[in-house]
Length: 538
Ligand code: FAD
Image (cartoon, rainbow, N blue to C red; front, side):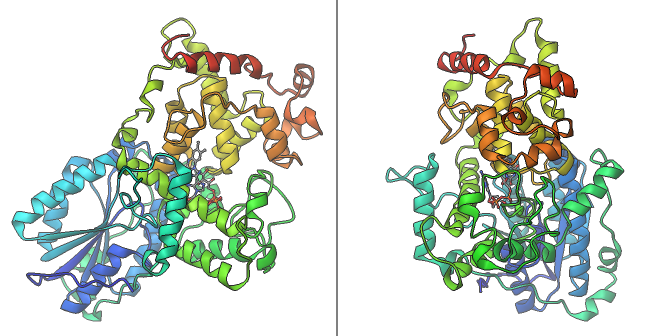
C-alpha cells in the first residue's frame, strides 16, 4: 500500500485533494490516497476540489467529447464520494490565471494546511502549479504533488549519457527491465480513500459543497444531442465500466461479427483467456475491421482507470494462464503501454513539443501546401475539409475519418494511415491534423496525439524516416483484408469486393457516387520526398 506519512507541521481543519482532468477516479489514485491517509491520521475531513476551466480547454484544444466524458465521470464520482461522506466541489474558473489564487483561498476557507494533487506534465500546467507552490509557502500550506499518470515517471529512465531517451526501442527495453526489477514498487496499488466521519454532512460550512452539482455542459463545449447520445452509448462513464472493459479485453474472445464501431462493453461475452483478445493481440492488433484492441484509451486518457491497474491485471494473467513467449499478446500490449509512457516522457523532457514545434528542428521549414502564400489556399482548405469528412477518394482514409467523426475513436493503424495521408500525400501541416484529432477524439491526449502525429509526419522523436511513406492502398489491403471496416463506414462501396475496394478506379467511383482521389499516391510521394529532402524548397 502506498501510504507514506506526510510530515504535517501544523494540523489543519481539513485536507484537500485537487483532482485534475486526467485522474478521474477514486481507486488506485496516489494523491487522493495520501490525502485520505493524512485526513484519517489527523481525524479531519477530506475535501475534493475540481476546477473546470474553459479557457484552459480552449488553449489546449480539448474537444467537446472529452469534456462531456469528463463531466459524466465527475457526476459519477460525486455520487461515490457522497457515499463516503466526502464533499466534492466541481467549480468553474473562467481564466487559467485565476486558478492559483482560487485554490489557495479555498484551502484557507476550509482551514486546510495540506493540499494534494497528481502532476500534470504540460508546460502551462506546470507553471500554474509552481505559482500555487510559491503562493502556498508563505501561508504555511504544504503542497504535495504525486506522479500518477505513468508506470515509470518521467525523468527516471535515462540513456548512458544521462539524457532522456528519444528513441522508443531502447526506452522500451529499459522501461521493461526497470519494471521487472521492481514490479511491486512500480505497480503498487494505493489504498482507497476512507469515509469521512458521518457528522460532517451536517457541518454548516460543508453543506453547500454537498449540495452543489456538476454541470451537464461547459459553455462553448456543448455536444449536439445525437452526439451526446452516441458518446454515452459508446463510452459509458465510471470506474466500474472501465474495469469491466479491461476484464473483457483480458478474458473474452473478440466478437464474431466485425463492425468497425462497437460498444466496448457489448461484445466478447465468452470467457476464454487462451483465445482472448489479449492472447491474440500480437498477431491481430493491426486488423482494423475486427475488434482486436482494448478500447481503453478514453478511460486511460481521463484517468478513469489507473494504468497500474491495467498493468497489474495483465501481468497477473501472464503468471496464471498464458505462456510467457516473447511474442505473446501480453508482452505486446505492455509495449503499447510503454508507448504511452514514452510520449509523456517526451512531453516532460522537451517542452517545445507543447508549443507547436516539431521535435526535429530541421523539419521546421518543410513547405506545407496550406502554408504557401499563393492562390492555392482555397483548394487546400477544401482538401482539409475532404479529409475531415472522409471524402478524399481513398477508402481506408475515408473510413478512418468517418469513424473518428462518428465515434470519437478509431483504431491505431487507421489513425496512422489517415495522419500520414494528410501530412505526406496531401502535404498539409501535421498540426492541422493534430488539432482536429484533439477536437473530435474522446481519448484526446496531448502527449499521445502529438507523439502520434509527429511520428507519422516524421518530425518527432523516433519518427519513421521521412522517406517511409505509407501507400494507403496497400496498407488498406493489409489492415482490412476482409473489407469489413470500409464496408461499414463507406456505404457507397458496400457492394465492391476484392482489390477494387481498396483502390477503386475513377470509373467505378463515378458509377457509385464516390469521390475520385484528390491526388495520385505516386505523385504525392515524389512531392513529399522532394520537400522533406530539402526543407524550405518546393
Ligand atoms: P490498445 O491497443 O488496447 O492499447 C492500450 C493502450 O496503450 C491504449 O489505450 C493507449 O493508452 C496506449 N497506446 C496504445 N498505442 C499507443 C501509441 N501509439 N501511443 C501512445 N499510447 C498508446 N492515443 C490516445 O490515447 N490519445 C490520443 O489523442 C491519441 N492520438 C493519436 C494520434 C495519432 C496520429 C496516432 C497514430 C495515435 C494516437 N494515439 C492516441 C495512440 C493510439 O492510436 C491509441 O491509444 C489507441 O488506438 C487506443 O485504442 P485502444 O485503447 O484499443 O489501444
